[in-house]
Image 1: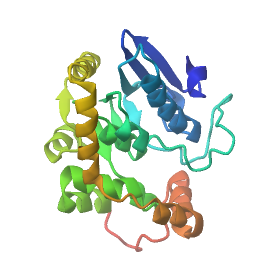
Image 2 (image 1 turned 180 degrees about the vertical axis):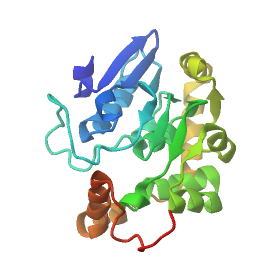
Image 3 (image 1 turned 180 degrees about the horizontal axis):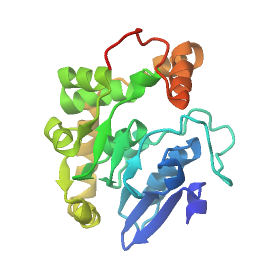
Image 4 (image 1 turned 90 degrees about the vertical axis):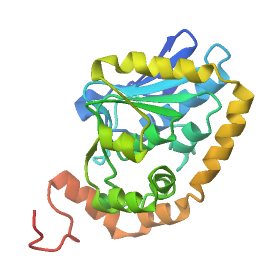
Length: 259
């Protein structure tokens, strides 16, 4: 089934009317390649087009849900993207707009693009061991989706805190702030995710779609033009990623800053 998603680092599994997309790249701590991002998008579209499937659960393996993109630019053998896909690989808006319910089962570390996947899902169920972070500004990336989504979830003041500090926070704080909606003991995560999917599937599809559209209007403008323009022209993203790979502070960190 991984062939359907274009990468062996994602598993697509069926459990009755519910599908699972399992992020399975433990050797790279589940870091997402472009093909994996697009594969998650494919999984959402596949569930929406298959009359035998009603919902999708996205989860990870081990102690990591997803830490975001692979900053080392690594990929896996056999991965493929469609010709001419360009920038249109990200799954976040596809998850947000999916008519079929999408549940995030957050099993561990959840950062950057992984956190956006959880936030765009209809329900995010987190293990009590999960941790969260918005590290984009540490890498010099002005992330447009976070800038639109975080304030809608947590308010402006907390969004500033999480974006500008890039601090790690736990599952209880994530639920209290409104980043995710449910916490469960780690060993019950699979059952809790299935329960959430079953609950949503009991609601009327057309009414649910209208309600989802109205809720999504609260996100406002997602300024991808600024984000992609910065990625192409600013030296900061390159420096941020290079510093991460070299395990050193980026050049913009003031000398002598208290640790």
